[in-house]
Image (tube, rainbow, N blue to C red; front, side, top):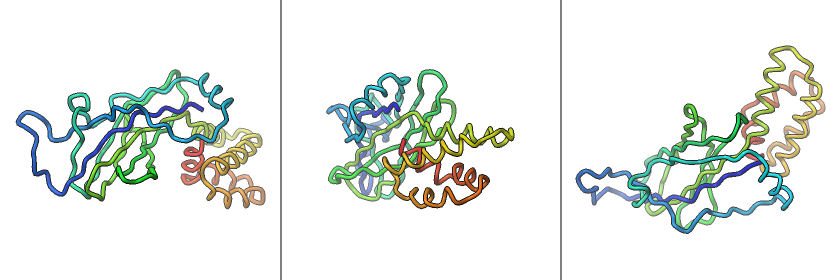
Length: 217
């Protein structure tokens, strides 16, 4: 699994835009943090990191909004949403996934929201800023192994091919996701072995399962 994290950006929310931008300069700007990338704690052992280094690279660039190369913080009125976009792509054609992490400057915990593909290599998502003050966000992207599995499983079902091995692989994927991210899938797993194959396929392709397992990749 490859994971790419871009340096955090700054957003400034205010009650009103009392100081509009000078003539000719857009009011919406963004300031890049000069402290370098945020290092989030990772549970994976060193050998997993070495394996990830051999995976195709993931590129995140052209993050928006940004004006004058991020010399100024973006400004929004508290309660408004901010749409964040970026070009995200990788070598070859593996499936990838992305999400936005964001928090206020005085908060320790990051909030997360999925970042869907908009068109071509452009990804986009909106976050709502309910408080006055500075906020930070960053973008993570990784190879979406479960998403690729779900895509291929759907194709096999539609082609009426044998999926016995795929159903077992799906069970193992859910087990892995429970360990790394989403304990809510434990309920899904507990009933998995007792249902028929049609129900198993429905479970594996359900939006909640795909999303939870993807974020646990």
